[in-house]
Image 1 (cartoon, helix red, strand yellow):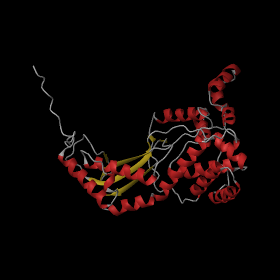
Image 2: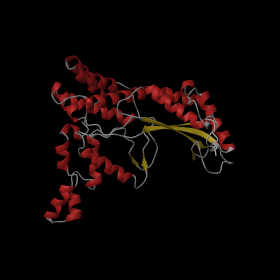
Image 3: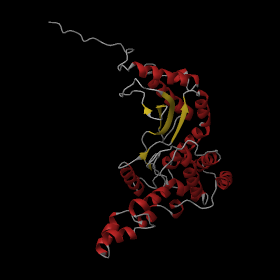
Image 4: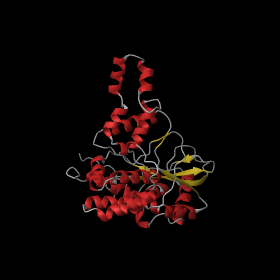
Length: 343
C-alpha cells in the first residue's frame, strides 16, 4: 500500500495569522516608515508574514549597513509601537486588539551578546612605545563609548565593586566589620573569598582604575596627534589613529534611554587579562540587576506617527554614532587581537 504524501504549504503563505485590527495598525506604522524613507528596498526581507516585523528586519539591516562590518561588537535594533497613552505593543501581540490606537514608534538599540576582550597587554605595550599613550587611548575609549556604546572598563569594575561588595565604601573594611566583627580568622577568610581592594590593585595599574581628572578630549587629541608623528610601529600607530578619530567626534547623550533600574547595557567587557576579576564583577552586577528593574538598551528614540520627518532626522543624527561604533570596535579588536607580548 502506497503511503500518502503530506500536503505542503507554499513558503509565501504566512505561518501566523494576525488579527485584522492589528494588521491595520501595523500597516499604518509600515507606511510611516516608508514615508520616512527609513530603509532601502534591498533591506526588506524576501519573505515575511507581518509588515511591521519586516520593517524591523529592514531597519536592522539598515543599521548594520550604516555601521559596516565589525570584529567584536554585534549591535541589535528593536522597534516597538506605542499607544497614544504610551503603552507598548509588539509587532505580534496576543492582547485584545479592538482598541489598538498606535500613536508613536520607539526605536532602540543595544548589543546582542556582550563578550570579554582582554586589552591590558595592548595598552601597556602602547605606553612602552610612547609614555602615557595607553592611558590616553583607554580614556578616549571609555569617555566616548559612554555616549554611544558603553563598555565595561576597569574603572567601572572598581566603582561597581564599591557598592557590590564594600557597602559603598572605598575598601572592604566596613563590610568585614558588619559580617565578621573582631574575629580575625573569619575576616581573613572572607577577605580571601571576596573582591578586595588589593585584588583590584593587583589586577589593574593605577592609571586604569580611575577616571583621570582634568583630562579632556581636546588634550587627548593633541597628545594623539603628537604620538602619531613619532610612532614607527604600524599597529600602535593604527590604534592611535582610531583613538584620535574617536576623540574628535561630537557626541552627546541625546538618545540615552529613560529607564528605571540598574543599567547593564554594555557592549563589551574589557578585562585586563583573559578571565581576570573583571568578568566576576560583571557577572555579579548582572545577577544583582536581574533581581529587580534593569535597562539593557544603549539608546532609544520615540517619534509620533504623524511626523515621519522626525524619524529621518534621527537617522541622520546617528551618523557620528555609527562612526563611533566602528572606531570603538576597531580599538577593541586591535588591543585584544594583536600580538603585543614582545613589545
